[in-house]
Length: 151
Ligand SMILES: CC(C)(COP(=O)(O)OP(=O)(O)OC[C@H]1O[C@@H](n2cnc3c(N)ncnc32)[C@H](O)[C@@H]1OP(=O)(O)O)[C@@H](O)C(=O)NCCC(=O)NCCS
Image (cartoon, rainbow, N blue to C red; front, side, top):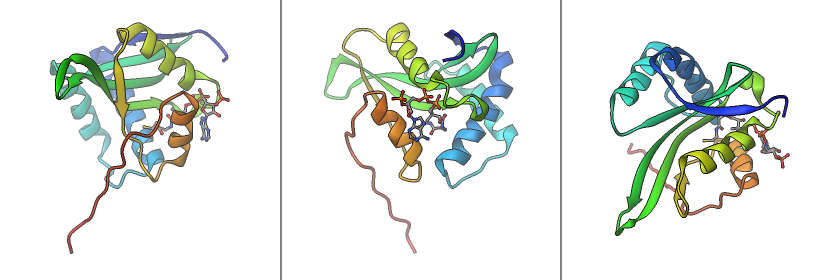
């Protein structure tokens, strides 16, 4: 890795950059819907205003190199078991392949989550690179989401 990475909560000033990175994520994972940047800014603002979603920035040398969006949950049948749903994880296109993804995920586990927390996340079939990344950093497949679109 080129330089030290840190994790901090996103602020309102970060929202335009998070929206740009969200667009990169949507394009690179092959998501079918492509919202405009204004819609994504509104989305990140809504998450910031809610008590539900948390957004963190990954920073190196004062530059935003990635971000995460996640939500604390509990196991549906046992509220004693802590869980976190990791909704978005993205490293900026021009910062990939430097170890920031691996280091950023480790920071997230170590700095944000208590012992014994189960992390879940979805990775699309159209995103084999993302699947390879998640396998490399220690996650394992749990279930497969199926779909059908009515005619
Ligand atoms: C997936 C992503 C987070 C990886 O970030 P990154 O900073 O490039 O990853 P790193 O450099 O830390 O690589 C970590 C490991 O993942 C593997 N990896 C990363 N990108 C990969 C790719 N495109 N194909 C195969 N393996 C890959 C690396 O080989 C590396 O393994 P190693 O440490 O054993 O050498 C980044 O490419 C990204 O943001 N992609 C778009 C959004 C996305 O797909 N998010 C995750 C799915 S929800």
